[in-house]
Length: 148
Image 1: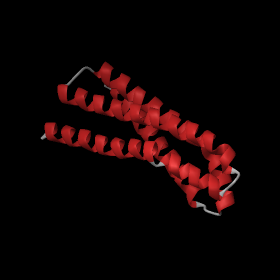
Image 2: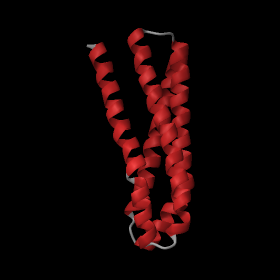
Image 3: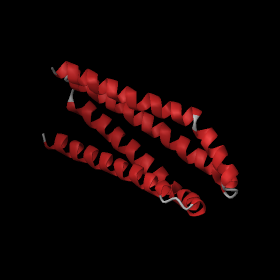
């Protein structure tokens, strides 16, 4: 049963990563170019948006890779030191993504202000809060492993 659950979690991890990366590679340039046509101010800041979003996908994929490694460690019953190192890497990846989205929030505010769409800010806030929850869960898991 445990082997099937780790396999299922690995599949879910890949199902999350593959569409995310493909959307970033294929659709993001098209969306940013369209946004630059609609909102002329965003023509200058679209490159900052590219840097922020592409910069956030790298630690996101690294965090997913670390989660897959953690599943392998669970399956093979590896020592707790490797668990802790992997959980720390997940925590740092999550903090990095949160930090990059916080840095990008002023850009999202400019886009939302020109477009009169609060959904853009809500999206940035949701991504930030999800990463904060991930960071907190990683820290709790790390602390519990230290207790044993």
